Length: 471
Image 1 (cartoon, rainbow, N blue to C red):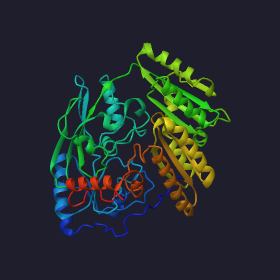
Image 2 (spheres, one colour):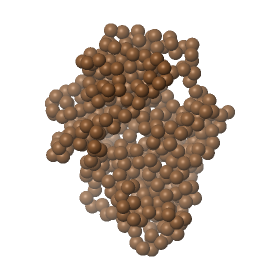
Image 3 (cartoon, helix red, strand yellow):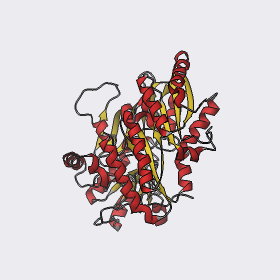
């Protein structure tokens, strides 16, 4: 059973923007027939995303297919002060694609052309609706590699990846979306078309507006084209799964790994509750309290040596160590990881999932705090994630709606501890609607005010994805 949505409090003074008959005529006149959805049942299908934020119904869903159409819609929206919520694949976890103020949902899914893969210069140009896995597959056919995997590789879109500065398991070695972003084409709130960035790996010319738009969650501009850096395809890949008698042993092994200078592609952590949810798909012996899933890549010559060193570092800390014997076994291990969040949703009526991140060396403190929080509150808390770069997904799971305030209080305790450890409220999902009331825990009033002034420069009338990021 899919988890019902948990309503997140928004501005009680907000006004849902319905469209007048003249606005509807102007909007439908901009695009071919069938590209503006006005029937309520159809509009409701674009009112939610993969977050537990309560859905909202837009006044219209508009399907655009090129930059010119985006610009035309934004010119009308700016002139008429209509809120616009950009939407890619709807796979976000923080309510970023939910039209809290009604108005227009601007659906970018049909802008899905992979425009160019330049092998000589190692970059790709894509439209925002291209599925991330599609780019990876096409790059591999050209002998290149796009390493960013937000763990929803097969259904998330690159526009959403850029909007949230998405990451995933591979960020330990390869970094996040921003580390691969070279340039963008975007449409501003008034319909102006802007091109920023370049096709070179180095640039010291002016402000880096590409990086500013990356992670801005659709509040500054609508992304219509993306230029991404590609890498040489690794010759070989090895995957290893290990279990441990305690969570402290698992995160301690990661600390030993850093000291030994070993940098895997990924090091995924699972606490005992996550292991239980994955037990049918992973080689987990009864009594295991934590697990680590590692991936290494590199040359055929060096990778086996790296694997041997990894096993040596794990040493006596690990209870069981299993190396994938072939590609099929490797895929089974990763499939178990990829469907973990789905398994969690199936078992609990309600959930809140946070993607907090701390400096990797402070993971032992983080894991100890989560154990103490679990004991102190009595809440069911399941923890897994990209421990290689300090990013943990902390899931608060419950059945009764009456527990929601208790969960909210525990989430705030988590956030305050994360920031005290030098961490951040979000490593890869963004702030969206669900975390905006907590932003001041991490950022000062001065920092928030400066960002709001930037927002006003890009979007003077506040029509782009209102209600997101800022408290």
